[in-house]
Length: 142
Image (cartoon, rainbow, N blue to C red; front, side, top):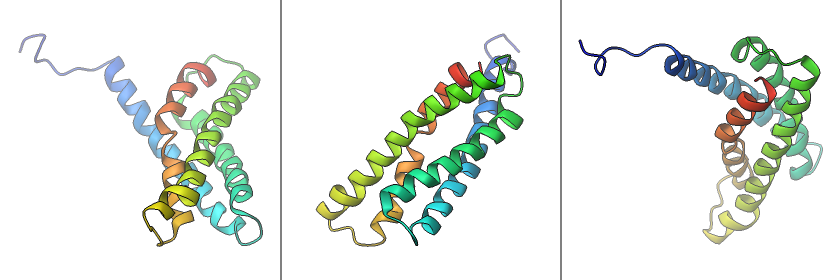
């Protein structure tokens, strides 16, 4: 076996497994976000429900990322939390803009009528996955 064909380990596999854990944690936080938005929408408007659900999902994500994904960080807790909030403020803006754009303009333009707010929010929650991972890896939990 040559160096070119040898199995690779080390940083590459660590990053893949760390990203996989990030996706798993993010999926859990997204489920909290998504489910709570549906419940919040019973009592409040769509945009307000998105923001409050995002905050609940963000809290879930911070705790799970700190416990399971970025365990070897040397950054102080208050710095982690500050950067986590900053990165997530950018992500909630992405989520809100995409959700509103799809539900209010794009879906009506293509005559999408099957649960447009639910579908728009699902897409909106999924979009910031990569940008959030990069932000948290290099800022929140460096």
